[in-house]
Image (cartoon, rainbow, N blue to C red):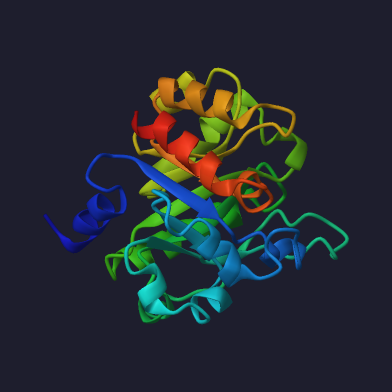
Length: 244
């Protein structure tokens, strides 16, 4: 055993499962319904069985450590611009150093890997180098796979190949959007896959059951939680699906 392996095991609660509340959206969207007050949003589901949160660096600095002492904290470590930009960035930049991640108390970091665009190689190179840098400090890295053409983020062929590429360049965990035949995505990826979300028109519980049956290791849901009128009930239902 080494430090990285130990932290990866702790992050997955020793049962190989992970349920995160993805509250990092405001980095792109600014003020969002349900996340106007990020600390209150965190508190709304704090006493549930959710494992932890994905947060931006600035929010880490606002949290009382005692509030989240029993939760995992994943630090968003890359950025790709905002909706105020004129184009969707096909190359995300690393904004967090390993030292900053440690200083903030992160249990892991999340990095975006954008593929299929004009900077495909540069995106892969930067993510691979960042993974190595974080691993030198025994910090686990979750890589979220995105297509440069956002409309293809639910394409089975892209998701299946994208998560495999992420694992091949060193990701410890992969975060991916829902697609049909999710079992083929899982079977082709040697590291745990966390579902990033399902189609907006779909029932989130049905999607959750489908991907868990296919072998997904967890969820990282955002709007389904912070924009819900009953987030605790949703978390409880999703926990039942994930862990039986």
